[in-house]
Image 1: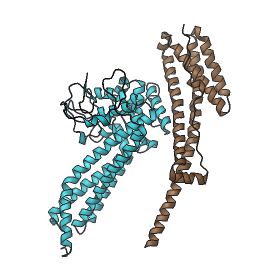
Image 2 (image 1 turned 180 degrees about the vertical axis):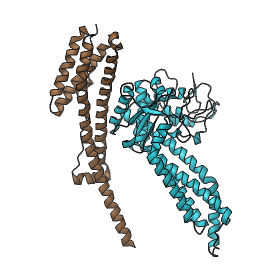
Image 3 (image 1 turned 120 degrees about the horizontal axis):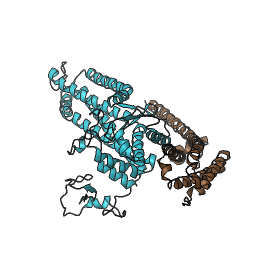
Image 4 (image 1 turned 135 degrees about the horizontal axis):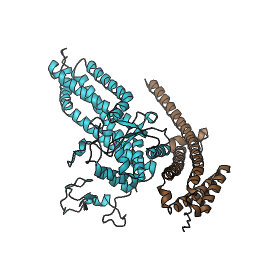
Amino acid sequence: MNSPCPTCGYQNRAGTLRCGLCGKPFIESTVEPVLAVATTSSRRVEGEDEPLPVRRDYAAEIAGNRWKSAVLLAICMALLLLMGLSIGGMYHYPRIGLVLGVTLGLILTIWAYFGGSKAVLSLSGAHDADPVQDRQIINLVDEMRIAAGLPMPRVMVIETEAANAFATGRDPEHAAVAVTRGLTKLLNREELQGVVAHEMSHVRNFDTRYMMLVAAIVGAIIILADTMMHGWWWGGIGGGRRSSRDGDRGGNAIFAILGVVLVILAPIFASLLQMAISRKREFLADASAVELTRNPLGLASALDKIDRNLDKEPLPGASKATQHLYIANPLRSFGMRSSALMSTHPPMEARIKLLRAMG
Amino acid sequence: MIIGIVVVAAVLIVFWIIGLYNGLVKMRNAVKNAWAQIDVQLKRRHDLIPNLVEVVKDYMAYEQETLAKVIQARSAAISATGTTDIAAAEGQLTGALKSLFAVMEAYPDLKANQNVQSLQEELTSTENKIAFARQYFNDSVMRINNACEVFPSSIIAGMTGFKQEAFYEITAEDKEPVKVKLR
């Protein structure tokens, strides 16, 4: 049962109130949908009522997502610099707060870098794949690492009926790919291959490192914002203990206003940036998976099945700290549409639609 | 001051050029490695076939011709020398195996056998691995070809003697559809 969106033509499931891809409500529009021109083409498939979107190419998707996530990361770093400058402008001894914040960020990053994978794997109850029982999944991982030209990662299985998968590892030499028992039962060989390709692509693109860097920057921004806020209780807005010279007064005022704005907005903005980067890296992993398998429909079909299964069974070991590692967000609540901006994963329908357009 | 900036700029440019050269070296080695990987997977297939033939021949009394073709193709592939001959022989072997798999579909008790199932998974996986190894080889060739043609690195490639590589092309036998005679 499908309800086509009146604006972009995407096939939504029956009963949806908003289009899963363009977000427009399901109200018949009297205005000519301009979007339809850009997103539809004359490509048709036997038996489909709606034309498919314009043909996409995985190499362009890979390049596009790398670029977009790099731009967002640059904005994050710029925000951090701005915070540092504001602190510098507000007080006369800014360095202590700055050094403290950055050092803390570095310590957290190094701990997560070396110890993070082990913690995540033991939390989720993963065990090494059995060479006889789990032969197929080991073969699939082997096939994908040959296509990628990487060393063989550690293959693990999580004994749960929930269908999901994740990959960790700071680089391809120390990587681990884990799938759930439920996933191996749910998907066929082609679909499993797509999922494994997606996870290995996270390893290939150094996504754990990337997201750790982003998390460290965001953490530092939050610490700095906190420092600035506490500074006001001690020294009052606009100056430190040492009295400023006359020439400095104007400068301090500007930084003070900037400071207020940043303290309130920066943490929120930084978190939004972090989520946006995570979503771009997910799209990148999807496109990189296609680069490996050259079979976008396999992954599309897998995502569809996983999506339908997501609400049936909770996943042990999944928490806010680890949710971004999985192929499908394990914390999605029953029936509720999570806010799109604060989600680590792009909406499943958008991912499936994009993959089908590549096929 | 100006001299300082010029010196720093020059040093950065030198590092950049070195980086481009190193990239070309790594890409060429990746191509060589990828070629060797294909051989690894082909040999794996050679080793798996005797097992498969042993297991199925008792069930498939009427398919001696198909089995014989597989055994012959395997021997030919093992003894072939020279890139074109090896490619042709492996192509023949792929064709023979495809015929065997197609014929095996007609034997339900054969398909239900646990040993046969795991062997088939291994052979399917090996065929996939050969295909992916070739894919990785072609991807590596594409990367070095790009680097040899794209503007800044093309100069370095020209100066240091890096050449474009040839893609792995499928032989004619590989492209032919499988001819199956079912009872």
